[in-house]
Image (cartoon, rainbow, N blue to C red; front, side, top):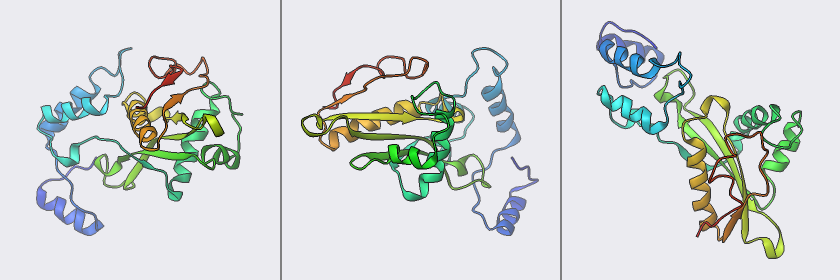
Length: 218
């Protein structure tokens, strides 16, 4: 967060650093945002607001428009996403309580699984410039894969796997990827989706309807 004396000094600073000017927030709005956002952080019930809750908070203090939208973009993974995907994969697997992979799995073996031939890899992306003009343009907050559960006669049934880093959990990103996954499964011609098993200690996944054995995308 940067403080400025006036809008003129904002323009001078942006010109000097060659970055576009972003919407401004005054001190009264900043105080209201802080009270609303962090007011319960010392309680057991404290959690980060979900995207729809964030937009509601922003709107309540007059912060509206495209810049303040917190929609997650889900798209096919690109080669340039691999470093970010590995970071998410490594964090999720290293705990040993979400997937049956070796917590010390190598990047090469991880990618051999995540980018299997015949499969489809996706990423969930947020515009980080909405958080800070000094950060990268975008950041990945999740990834998932969609592929046939079996070959041959079982190829009409899909299988999927989802990963969300700890810092991005509780914001509805996993649910957004799940809904996107069902839509993609339908588009790709799958007639059902089967999750073969869920590790019992993966608490966020062991909740209905995400761990149901079969979900029909049609």
